[in-house]
Length: 173
Image (cartoon, rainbow, N blue to C red; front, side):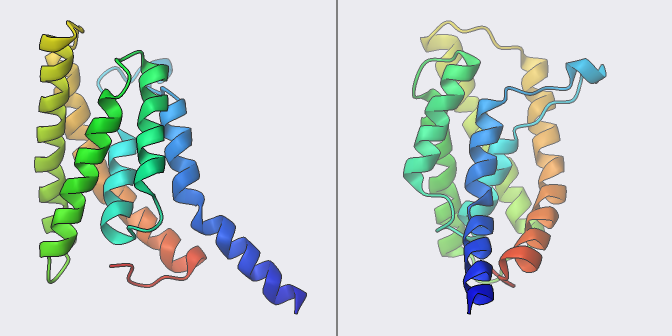
């Protein structure tokens, strides 16, 4: 009986891994400058929020996503609430895709993800550059969008593997 309880306890902890990863990713303003990879940056938070909002919408709550965006704003130094708004727009786009999709596929999801991050980064750039007079580099933004899009395939596969192996959900959507 205690073995069954331990498995349920471990399963509950493993089901919270996406939320833990979200807060770790927003609290660590990581880049690869110390590895001398100057032209490699990606937004892991976008990938995580998009995947788990699309496949398993109950794992990340909108309140937690909003709070994670506030933490991200504090760590990065952008105006408070901008990242939270972008995260919630990403969640809204993901909810729209989840509701209109009959047959999910990685290619369709990734194309929609690319369009969504282009729109979100455009809104972020416009609001930060024109409203708040915050300096952003065009080239860095293009590198970030490209790497985020390309790494979506890798992380989607890793998240699928994690869900199937450790949490026990075969097809979350």
